[in-house]
Structure formats: structure tokens, C-alpha cells
Length: 261
Ligand code: HXC
Picture 1 (cartoon, helix red, strand yellow):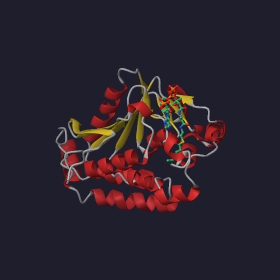
Picture 2 (cartoon, helix red, strand yellow):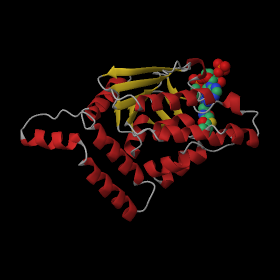
Picture 3 (cartoon, helix red, strand yellow):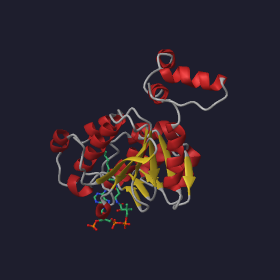
């Protein structure tokens, strides 16, 4: 059954083969309440099951991508309540999105908002974007993967500084550190994200899925096992019609038409 989310706008074909998921909880600066996270997880799962969609763009507004987990909701919770609610299990569902996921980030991407951008595969930022892990200022620490993904993305010294001081970094710094793929003016960042998504949507969805899995595996395992995993996925691409089409098109000097089979 199609979703009717309260805090999201989902557009399955915002561009050919590209879906848009837009966070829409403006008064609270897209604070990541449990229900919003649940809607994001459900929307991504639904878009993954839709064969017309090849790439998903996740965005907020020009002012804010997301200002983090909902502080009002969390302020009076005990550890046991937090454990029972277990919002972070929803992050696992988001992480399992097998289609390429591009974050288009403008304004604040703080705490869980920064972590949400890092769950995505690529990030296009507007010049006003700020990335930060300010949890320490609230007497807590990152819980949505910040200490792990940020460290892998920007290195230990920078991650330590961001996590221990809570000081955010600018879009340009994030690009220099490798957290962000590209930076565009405020009026153009979403278009730039669509451009990147469209370039991926032209590729074989089968190959894109297997390649995404293999790149992600590099964070989770040692080199030997990672290379093994890559080799199996490489051979598996030869089971697809897209592989035949891609290579035939090259030899016939024409553009390929990938079908996702
Ligand atoms: C709940 C939030 C919120 C949040 C902002 N608001 N961030 N509500 N949770 N994370 C609310 C404010 O209370 C305010 O509500 C309204 O949004 C507008 O915010 P202002 O602070 O007035 O806006 P501004 O002065 O422009 O400052 C923007 C800001 C600041 C710099 C982003 O709001 C801020 O520092 N927010 C908190 C950022 C943060 O600490 N994030 C980490 C959260 S912990 P009212 O009702 O007053 O208008 C976290 C843990 C993740 O993310 C764990 C994994 C899941």
C-alpha cells in the first residue's frame, strides 16, 4: 500500500528514474523524531521496490537538512526508555537501501542530520551547508554512526575535533575533507544532486547495486575478504542482460540502454 507520510514529501519520478524524498518538518528544523525516521525508512523501502526508480535523492529545505534527533522528545527519557524505543534500529533499515542514495544538503546538517547525510552514498552540499556533531554540548555523544562513519570519511584527528568540541564545519571544509562530493550555490544544489543522480541512473541498475554493495563492504571487512566479495559481485554482473547490452553498445559504438535485468 502506498505511504501517506506526514513529515515527508515523496516524489517517485522527480526526474526520469530518479526519486526525491524531502524532509518536511520545518517548524522543528526537520528534527529527526521517531516517526520521521520511520517514514524515511518506509519511503526508501518502497522506492527500492519500485522498478521505475534507480536512484534516490534525499533532501531537506534550503535552511536545514536536519538539526538532529528530536531534543524535546529525548530530554526526559531514561536509558531504558531509549533502549525500548530503539530509534537507532531504524537507521539500520535506511543503511540497507540498495539503490544509490544521494543527499542534497543545505543549511544545518547537525547530529543525526549529519549522520543521515553520511548514511547516504554521496553528498551534494549548498554553499551554506554546515556539518557537525554537536551532541557533546547536550551531554551525549553521536549514536547514528557519527563516531564511525565520520572517522572513516574525514580521518581520526578531524573527527575527534568535531565530536569532542561540537564545532561544525562549512560545506567547503566538508568537501576538502572528503565528506562531500561537490558544493553548489544555494539555488543550484538540488539540480546538481539531480545531475549526479541522473548520471548514475543511466548505468545498469544491476551493476550499480552490486558495485554499491562492494564499495560499502570495504568499510566492513579486511582487504582479502573485501576483494573476494568484489570478485563474486564482478562475476555476477555477467549474469545480467545489462552486461551484454553494455558491452555490445561499446563495440557497436552506440549508447547502451540498460533495463535493470
Ligand atoms: C528538537 C529542535 C532541534 C532538535 C531545533 N529545534 N533543533 N527541536 N530537536 N534537534 C527547534 C528549536 O527548539 C526551535 O523550536 C526551532 O526548532 C527553531 O530552532 P532555533 O534554535 O530557534 O533556530 P536557530 O536559532 O536558527 O538555530 C538553529 C540550530 C539550533 C543551530 C540548528 O536549533 C540548534 O543548535 N539545534 C540543535 C542541534 C543539535 O544539538 N543537534 C543534535 C541533537 S542530538 P521553538 O519551539 O523554540 O521555535 C542528536 C543525536 C543523534 O542528533 C543520535 C542518533 C539518532
